Amino acid sequence: MINSFFSKFTPKETKFFPILKEMSEVMLVASDLIIEFVQHSEHDSAAEYYRKIKEQEKKGDNLSNRVFDELNTTFITPFDREDINNLANRLDDVTDYINSCAKRILLYNPKNMPENAVVLARIIKEGAICIGKAVDELDVLKKNAVKIKQYCIELHDLENKADDIYEEFLLDLFEKEKDAIEMIKVKEIMYELEKATDAAEYVGKIIKTIIVKYA
Image 1 (spheres, rainbow, N blue to C red):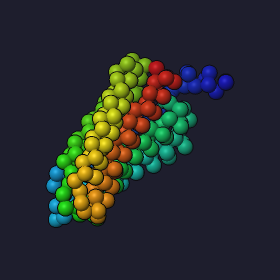
Image 2: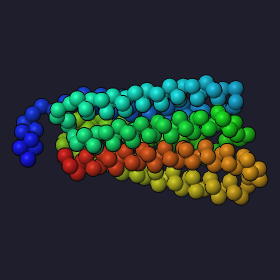
Image 3: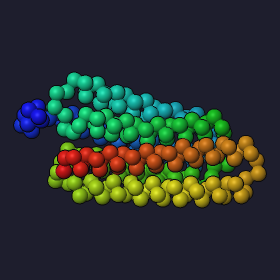
Image 4: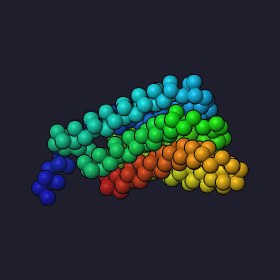
């Protein structure tokens, strides 16, 4: 209780905000790349797209590790340590799913990429933009809580939209695709894209938790 009282008057480290912002920028770069990749998934260019996305995924991992290290050496944090750690991990998850999708495109070399893959990839980018805006406002949370909450609502809406598109894709796939191997390939690729939108929505849930505690 005493620690909680004195923490209100102790300067809090703000170094976490630039790292989280950098993580959101990594996610945005990866989302741009996956949009291009699903539109140009020819095997000749697949390795180069995967290399670029993997590079972003490694950056995200390094930044997530930096957050963890800083949490272990920082006395007073702007939010609960657990919330900061969870937020960093979930930001990293979005990039991880993008990377996982790219890896499957490279390995599976599908004959045709579903049209809905582009739609899902663009939803991921919309989510990345939304997350970037929310992260930008975290250091002034009390002033902009309403605006940040709206970003979280947008992330939820985007995830619902992605669910609908994924279900539509499945119905179309099972009705029209006769090649079982190709069916498995594209289904796994699309699943990773859909999971990226789930992870983006979860980022919004963590941010909403922070709003409840601190706004």
